[in-house]
Amino acid sequence: NSEITNLVDYVFGIEVGLDSNARKNRGGNNMANAVAAIFQQHNIAYRSEVYSTEFLEIASLGADIKRFDFVITTSIKTYLIETNFYNTGGSKLNEVARAYSDIAPKINRYSNYEFIWITDGQGWFSAKNKLEEAFNIIPSVYNLSTINSFIQQIKAEL
Image (cartoon, rainbow, N blue to C red; front, side, top):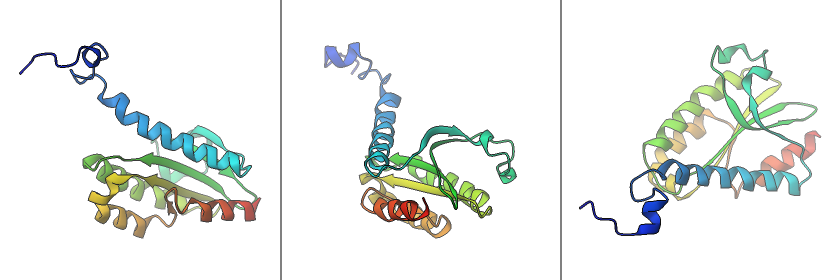
């Protein structure tokens, strides 16, 4: 049935599928904003949307150019941080878990760098096994409930 059921949604492209990426990105942007607010609340200096080309010593990343959501530098380490939030399950969660499981060891082999993944959302309930697999490979996986342990670690290193 190709009838228009909601004129407002149709005008904004929702009924014809034009808004799907914007809706998906909204959750990720909200998560990044929430994490930034937590960092600010604890007076933790960070940089956002930092490209891997700034870290030439991490040769293991090869020619791949990666943009990290946040970078925090302490007296001990530089933390390269990715954040995301999933309202629903699906193949995207599995692919992200697989990608981060691949990139984390490439970064963590350098003692002065660490990959951090902050993720949350109901979507993980249907992908617990992928999250568990990633957790076994990535030493530093946090959600909004456990991020305080990361915050305490950062404060101890400042």
